[in-house]
Image (cartoon, rainbow over all chains, first blue to last red; front, side):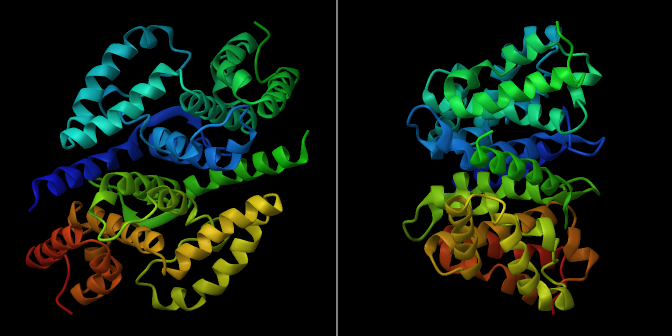
Length: 196
Length: 196
């Protein structure tokens, strides 16, 4: 078999493990945690639905691709909960090693294309990366809000930490920020998050 | 709140249910069945990896979007196993009703954009729809092959039915067909599928 196709198939088979990497967020109306594949799919479709609200022009197709592969490093680095202070200290180092391993499975040029997307996402500087980060952070908040507080309530998360986490959205979209700001205020009123 | 944003958020919350719609295919190395969100993610990334092998030029971004939303009708029509003869008789009618319902949740122009993508996928006439169908059908075969036969073995599927199911790939990509043809022959040699 063509060596390039062989590498691609091995990579695709490896991707299946993303369906077993659990995040902290639960599904709406269920006690079951979502996995990386489900989350990545959800935010890619969210981008299709919400891209029109961006304050600036951007390449929506690049954002979708970025989001589809943004969590592949978790194949080897695992999921690090955003409010886990200790875990986040070693996160960057673990994920860099994982990126070398996962994108290194592909032929060099293709691995570089994927790696460049991931690096762009991580640096969060381009309009595409900022919109991608906004989707990545908004989705678990929607799941928490529509699931009786979810991880907010489970871990006693404070409103200021929620605002800090979702801050990329503030500059990404005025319309989505207006909605999100009201949702976070309402979450506090309902006792789903604490004041500080 | 802006009525358009409100509809979008309701749609996005509804999408969460895709994470609970089980397909027949199991995860590789596990007895657990995959769901529609995981499957849709997997084949969207497969498109990023395998698009270079297409025999003809096509819009890869359109294929990715098509695959991300191709199973949304299963929110209300459920998953119909491809080898379920009875279920497939009513599939089209059930899915058309579901399409009206799910895409009707969005504002009219946005609903039409999604519906057009789904119609194109279903008609399987454009190069984009044919490549999308090829990914949609190849992924469960990979999962079966790398999971001791999976649903092939469970339901005693015959080689001719496997060939018929994957036939769109034959005209989509010579290189991927060469790989797939060998895989199906090997699946028969290993006793994962029956001869007829």
